[in-house]
Amino acid sequence: MDNTGAIALTKNPEFHQRTKHMDVRWHYIREQVDIGKIEIDYTQTSQMVADGFTKPLNATKFRTFVEQLGLVR
Image 1 (cartoon, one colour):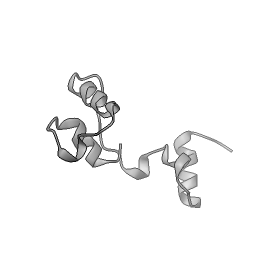
Image 2 (tube, one colour):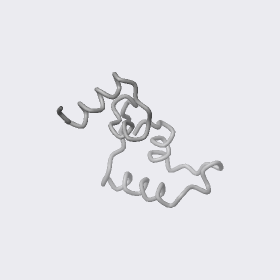
Image 3 (cartoon, rainbow, N blue to C red):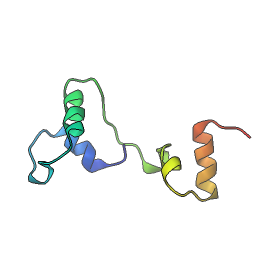
């Protein structure tokens, strides 16, 4: 993931006033990290393949996205 704040929340079990109403899924993810079932690592936004499906792309980023997907002409 490319959100360092979300990564910090999965690794720090400390209760934060601003996160007390967080969705249950975040607690589930933290639990899975704690038991070692998943690992959360930082990935640069430019390397996030899914961004090509959700963001507008200029020609250069489009070509990179196509390569990341392994598509050929």
